[in-house]
Each structure stands twice: as structure tokens, then as C-alpha cells.
Length: 520
Image 1 (cartoon, rainbow, N blue to C red):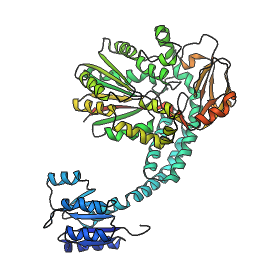
Image 2: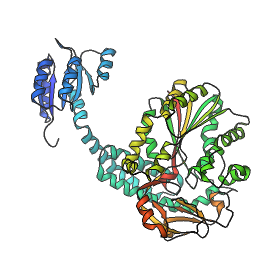
Image 3: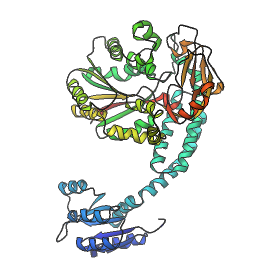
């Protein structure tokens, strides 16, 4: 232990029996005071500051739990360990309800007591040390996987591992190694962009697509939803613009409710809602949707997702060979959360598929660029993850998932695309007819000042988007670049640098979670 020694107070009417425990703790550098009753403990707490209190529950006079509230007021920063002879459930339940940090049943060995004390007082430091040791041991394998990555399975596994390390090292507050992981992710981002540029045309080829392509947006329903249609009731949840790291931040909230089978798939390009989510619900690429339903594919991108429920019903009919009852909800805010939960609850009582789209994260990422307060609150990926978890904990999404678990309904949860924190501008030269998106552009005579920053295409068949009225070419941003115009260079740089954007080709936008949730 470094710094000033931690101070412990042990309160037990038989404290003399624990002399070996006290000695054991003192030998390991802790300062330990002991007393036999709650009143004396409060007197000591008025004179000294304690980091941890070991408190007997069954003492003459006031019970330990009765003294707990007063001790907590006197030592608000202290951690509390209840030590008792009672193994009754109600005692444990009451202790947990009063926010006891640990619960030990007598007779507890000195080693058991030390373990509890070390976990509570030295836990963050031990967590940091363990994470650093494990990362050092695993770094050669990560580097080797990065150097040897060839197929999509390699890239997915590598990115998944880096996300896990990013989360673990951030939790352990290991900032130095977090920078190392960030550098690895930047390397992977660059190489993954080259891989996608070389392989994507084969993935989407109408005739004989590459047999080694990853699962794409068009495969989601057929591969993960349709196999469960025989279960009569199914919930399908899409959280728009949810990155893999955001999903793994909220996943622990679902673990008590479901057994979770997480897999990964790739969004189609552009990684934007009008293309990726229509591909999910339709099971087809945008060019096929526009050809078969020309009235559904308007020039205004804001209207392109107006027919998701119809696309979903028709895809399920093709896959199941019959009509499937679909209840569809699209949620932008939780202002009407109670009504939404009630509607979904009732819908889940009948046979069919309930599909719910939650747009909050997408709205957050879009609004963040326009709002200085949001820009500060969600200033980086770690802050965005924290904000995502905070939203999810109080959201109608979690309430609906709890309802599904309570009703024993299997759930498929996924997203349509992710987002990336963009730091580098790349100047594009375009005519006035070019689309305004910051990570992808369609238009005539498009050209990027730095060709290495973009995936440039002249054939709409690669992206499988509808052909424009005029000859069109396509630019998609790679890595963490975003598009700026030469006439608005400084304005765009100042406004959008440090924004979470999507539409381009990066692991953060393309490599996505899809989880099958089986109620416990």
C-alpha cells in the first residue's frame, strides 16, 4: 500500500476473540482500532476518520444495523462490513438494504477478513495492477492478430478484443495503457478501411457475392429473427446508432434478466439510417427496395425510413411463407414512455413479432454537434458510453426488455450502424448538387484533396444504392476523417471537429452487435 495507511474500526462485543484478525490486518499495514459497543464506536468516529468499519450485528444494547446509520453519517466516506453469526435471509436482506458493502458470517478466518478489507480499500489499485499485468501479457497476441488479420473474422475478433480492453482499462483508470489501446485502434481503423475498400464490392455483388463475406444488414432478420418465429411471440429491438462499446456498457444491465448470446455483423455502406436500417427491415439492398417500391424511395432522406413496418412484414412473409403479425413502434423520446410500455406489453401478449426502434442515441449524436452543452457532456467515447448507460437505465427500452423477460419472450436486440469520433477534416470539391453528409457524399465530379482519406467509387452497384438522375460518383470517409468544403473550411472544422458522425467506413460504424436474449 502506498500513501497514508488506511484506518479501520472494528466494533464487536467479543472483539478480544479477534485479536489474531487484528494482528493480521496490522501486519499488512492497516491501522486498526477496536471497541466493544456502538456508543464507543461513535465516540471514536467523532475523533478519527475511518476508511472502513467492521461491525457486529448482534451486540448487547443497540444492534449493529441500528448503529450503522449514525456511523455512516459520521464517516460518509467509509466502507462497511457486517460481521455476524446470523445466516438468516432477513438479516442479509436488511444489511443489503442499508447499503452494507460486504457481509461476513462468523467464524470468519483472518484471511477472509483481509480479503474483504483489501477488496474494498485497495480494490481500485488492485484492479489497475491486474489489468496492467493482463494487458502486458496479452499485448503480443493482439499485435500478432493485427499483423496477421486477413478475413473479416480476424478483423471482427481483433476489434472486439480492443473494445473489451478499452472498457476494462478505463474502468481500472489505467490511462497510460488506455492510450496504447487507442493507438492500436487507430492502426486497426486504418487497415480495416483498406480491407473494406478492397473487399466490399465482392460482398455486395448481385451475382455470386463473395462466399467469405460477413453477415450484413440485409442478413439480420433472416439469420437472427426468422429462426425464432415458431416461438409465437418475439421482440425485435433496434437501438439506432449504438456502437459495440456502448452495447457492452449496457449489457450488464440485461444480464440478470436474460442469457445473452452476442454475435457481430457488419452494416452496409453508407453506415446511415436510410440505407442500413431499411436493409435490415427489408432484407434487401437500397437499390432493390427503390426498384420494387419506387414510391417509397424519395429524394428527401428524412422520408426514406417511413415504410420500415411494411418492409418488415413483407420480408417476414417471404421468409416464413405466411403472413406474420407485426406490431411496430418507433420511439424518438421517452416523454410518452408509460403509454409506449403499455402498448408493447399488450402487443407481446398476442402471437407475432413486436418491433421497436429507439432513436435516442442517434438523436444525441446528431444534436451533440449543434449543442455546446451536449458536446461537453459527451466529450469523448468514454463520456458517450456513460451517457448511454445513464439513458438506458431510465429508458422505456429497458422497461420493455424487463417486461419481455417477465413474460418469457425471446428478444433479438441490435443496431443499424455505429458512429465515430471525427478529428481530421478532409477537403472535398463538389458541385452544388452533392449531398450534405459529413461522412459520405453522392454527387457529380466529387474529388477529395487527400485520396487516402476516402473510399471513392463511381459505380452505384458497389454500394447497391439507387442510380442518381445524373452521372454520380461516391465518396465515403475512412478512419476519423470528416468532409469540409474549401469555401467553408474554417467553419466546418470548428463546428464538427470532435463530433460523433456516421456514414463512412470504420470499425466503430460497421462492426456491430446483435444479441439474442433468452429470458432466465
